[in-house]
Amino acid sequence: MAVPAGREVRHVTKGQWVVSLGHPNGPRDGRPPVARLGRIEGSTKSVLRTNCTLVGGDSGGPLFDLNGNVVGIHSRIGLPISQNIHVQADQFKNDWDKLVAGEWVDKPASATKGGGAYIGVVFSDDEEDDAWLKEVEDDGPAGKGGLKIGDTITKFNDTPVKTVKAFRKLMESAKPGDKVRITVRRGAAVLALPVTLSKRA
Image (cartoon, rainbow, N blue to C red; front, top):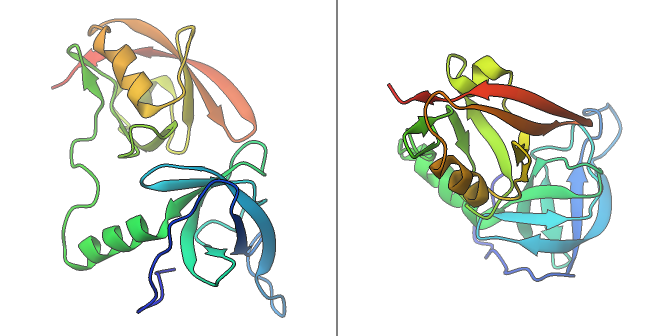
């Protein structure tokens, strides 16, 4: 859902009340979108974190402030389901305008590089976001190791990973051929997957 034309996107602050709309478990005839009240728990330049409850089927729905402005678009359901991620509406609109103009939105390089080691994934452009996977190369080290789109990396070997930036930093000391253990959160499951890093072709 795009930001309504002519409506300015408002800045949001931690603790601010917001309302999410969505279709839990998918749309149903005769049932309007379900509304849930919550608060902003944090934000970066491109994402918002709220405690508005979201479930499967709500993704893509709007997040409103109490003045009726669209401030976010539901992106990822957290664990627990009261910890959720929304794309900031202005970021969404900027990306949408680029797509309409035929421009690249994501960086075309589909890899995380550092120290010569290659894993073959694409993260969020926001370095302070958690390390969730937007893309995974099927034939890359991550894909061969069992990582999937939507996974969130939480550990690199025994080191906790809280942001994309932290993961990139750990990759800087890795070398092609290193066998590492990548722990990911996938829905309600936590998996430790063996990955053999390679050299970028």
